[in-house]
Length: 277
Length: 307
Figure 1 (cartoon, one colour):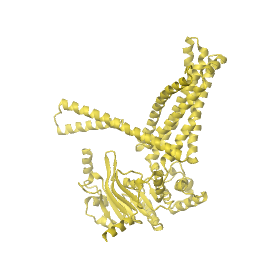
Figure 2 (spheres, chains in turn green, red):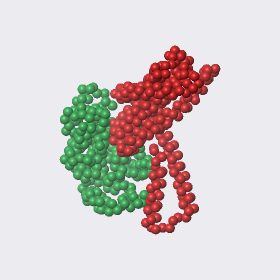
Figure 3 (cartoon, helix red, strand yellow):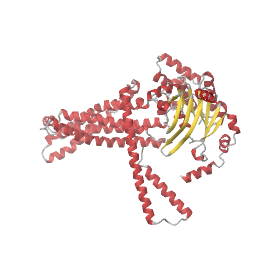
Figure 4 (cartoon, chains in turn green, purple):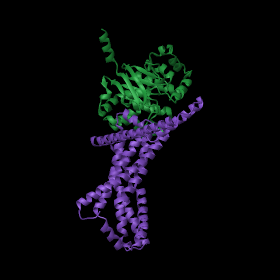
């Protein structure tokens, strides 16, 4: 019975990260991370800057090669795929970058149409219709199509990034700090769009964020990472995995600091780390 | 990727930290022998690190080049990525190459005329100028202008794309950045540098002729007869063949520097500068090694001829 349950659990997860470690030069960013995400779940990945949230997300999409461990998407080990297979696999992902990462040399229309032109066999008319429909879904007028990314505000650029990520109807959407640098109203617009995307399509989402308001509003589950320097000996880097409510009631000092936005003794710790280096 | 700066900074930082801690704790100075051994060990360690990181960077560059060739032969890039690069390299660079070619021709005539004048060989001026231009100065000059004008721009553009995660965005949308960004730039440089070289040769020859004929009043009959005697088809072939190597090196070095750009405005600036410096050094090294190889080839093809 136990084995059957375990097997069921394994089949259920769409993203399966096992004992993942990532090291850049001498700096060990992630060590022994194990994470399973079931389909349809919205997971908020929390943690202070430099703890490896974005690296974890980029490892899941294959942009960062792990030093050790295994990452499976829909039961396929992405590190064993060839470049071509990985390219095809990435059609099933949507990635919204922190600063939108729109191509400067292209217009907004060309940016949003990029994945369609790259992979799909769509006519120009179909592409035009799909682009306009996605842009209107994220609340942007048709007139932005001919503008360049530099002519748009930060919030508009993020929404264009979202439209571009959604255009191929991905199964997994990853948001890298979607509300960072936006005013409170625009942050909530982005939160609403994340919720609306989820209600329209049965997508799995990973939201990397510092923003507790976003986590409270959109997440089914919260995972919190901390930088390796702050770990106790033998402790795992994932210090919390549970619901938002559980997070708020968590007794761990470091979790509480993050939830309440308190520096506490952190400044002293950082000074000590700097001195040790 | 840029190992030359790191050891010095690290050593300086370590020295500062040691000095601060010595002052703070008021420790007695270490023994002179220990200090010298420590300094020597650090020196060896720094050089070791430099050698290792240079080997790693070279290996990384070779993999980058291999990947470029693999993508070039496996899938043709789309027109929308090719034409802007062809235009940048082949059309926009022409005026500046033509202008510098003209001036180099004139300057070459100016300097050579006084030297040859001492030996009464002014009539041979055409041969000297044109041979130098077609074999050496034309290709090297066109390549230098391309490295400065296009290579640095490529490194800065790709560096900015790296810093702003646009290269990651390409990968995330299933487009290979090497196929999408590097192959079109490589093809543009490879296919169009011969035309730039021919333009530099032509304008240099024209500039040299006008100066010699109008300013120095050298008889055009002697000028062109000696030019035809000195310069043959193999010299033209030499120049164009060299330019193909220069064009490949410029595009690959510039794209590699852009792809491995460090964060921030400083990183982009460094990528642009180092792409030109590396490309220029490689152009000169290639020029020498190709010059020696082609001389050997010429002598084996034409045993009696003088290269």
